[in-house]
Image (cartoon, rainbow, N blue to C red; front, top):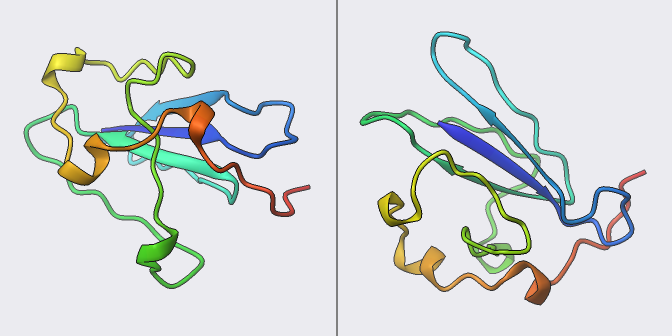
Length: 107
């Protein structure tokens, strides 16, 4: 599985940059996604189990997304665009430049 975090903190030095890491059962690694970062992932194998912890209760109204193929972010998803299967919800995500950025405290 490839896990990707995008900095959406409006005044950050790394605003609009991303970091990705391949997570797998051999390394048993993980990735921390702090507030102010968008998170996306793609499975790179036929089977994946994805477990995550959050610091707040689920809020459907707060859910947002970014188009996975945004040219400005240029994320390397480790597979061809034509192989990615998106949900209906994720197929309508806006481009990064059209996103409402994070304005919270993050220092």
